[in-house]
Length: 240
Image (cartoon, one colour):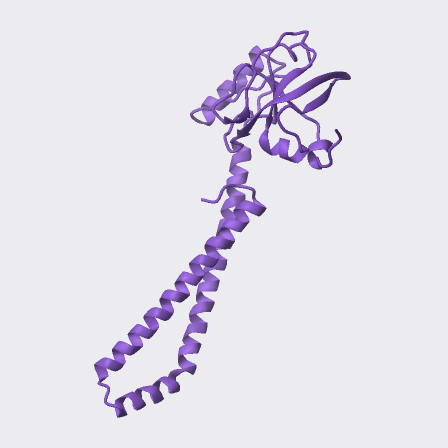
């Protein structure tokens, strides 16, 4: 059957991997993960990341044909899995089993962490001297750039929050000032009816206490709802 959908999932070039088991950043959501098949298998079982499967509008048992350097490989979806893309490691949308892609053009990626810049420099020099065809990429600079960008964004957000708070304080003072004469009239009327100074203070405290409580609750609910909407619908991340 022909299905509609795909979008970006049909326009991209896939860099997939093969292995016999899932890693610690993956969780099996449906089906069965098959890690090994015979080299002459006519239909190869694959594991597809659930968001990609949703974008392609495919599910368990559906057939996909891959073009690997001009060689078509027929596969079927044997499992769906979720991937923690925030983990700093190599993760893939599609995982093939062992016994299929070993002869295909491929490259190897290894991630490691060093204690400091000196150790990183020594490791890079040793790689260049021992293995000239191996590329070494220091991601520290990339991470530092992202940290700088995020710090600037956070500063802007904090500045806007402080600006909004100051503006709210000005509006609150103006509102209290405008209603000052109304409060004086109410106090005079209540004193005429026999209310004491202590009762008037208690009435005002209770009134402003409830006003402040409801204003704070409303602001918190609006902030949480806005943050949840941004996280879920804009940044596509879980709301915490």
